Length: 478
Image 1 (cartoon, rainbow, N blue to C red):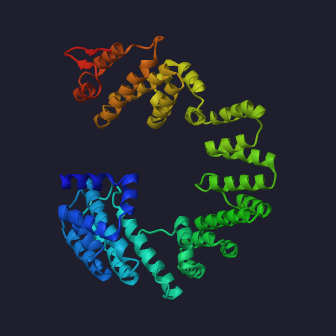
Image 2: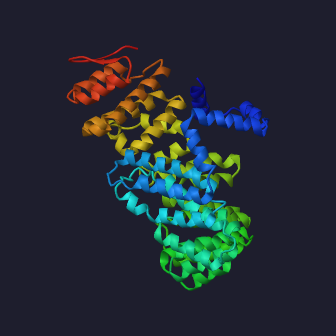
Image 3: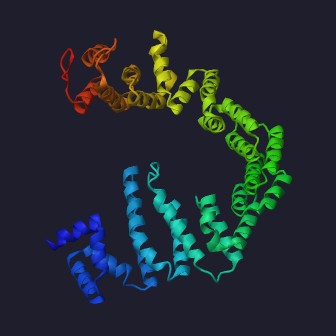
């Protein structure tokens, strides 16, 4: 009974009331409770003795021993087994390391560096395609960084070199979030030295990221003036302009960004949205509302990004909204229906999407999945159903089913059955089918065309209640 109760507590944790009661106990009572727990639960005993009753150096030796035992096998693990392997490794290391790192940071750093650099060897016999290794891997690197940060007596140049070297040998990236989190731990001088190392080795992306985190506009300006390689100079310009805006120098940012636009063709690059967003922000800061609106529309016409409509809308009065919507809708339709449909879905204009579907020619209806794409068709149908347009929602889901069956793509049958089930769900709100085939009629028409796709129909019977497939027909009982 005691073991079962302890198991439930360990599984579900303590309630607030239980925690309050526990904190009220004196030392003797707590020791008595601990004794009962470790007597009845072997896992609790191991956790206590290994994680809390060992010297830090002994804990690290235990971690190393367990790590070697876990990673010595050369048996190949599939992605599912690999996910479990890395999860268990993480689970083993975390509670032990958390108790050792603060008391033995130097020793922890040395061990963790070995483990980090051993990752490629360990991963050679694992299918890592699912990404299940990432939580473990980045936990180990971040813990290594914490161990390094705790060593306050180490020379800053040594620390910078260690950070640089680990970046060269691992998949760790010194992104802005990391830099902001550790700026106080390592200090500005360490990050400046680290930035200089990246710059000297022509690793400009990291040098720019650190300069931005340090608000070092002078260094970014120097990089721009030196005309470094193209991809990096774009990033440097954008980081520099962003810092100018933050420094209430939006007028200077506008000059920088406009000059950059003249000299560099980036309309079709991944940087365009960022540049235009900054330029719009700078003009708003300067009170140039009409110019900001022009830039919003210009940016939208480039790749039909919804965020530029949202920015535009934030700059207009409610009385201008209808006209603005029409302006952007007309623009989105210039490059074909896909962008128009995307915009309708993002705007949640499902009345217009319903109208679009209802007015399609028969040939276009037959190719609707090709026009929408699978993801957009599902998003659109969900929105249509929520807004009361069940007929069009059912039509889209049925079109998805037909598209899979027409291709004979058996690996996608499970998605087709899911779409079919959704169409059944949508129909619960219908009182009038308005020319749309009722489910049994639709299913029999589908069966007539695709009766040989036995695995699909078996899946339909398994997943959808009230549907049964006979020798020559499909039956549906509502």
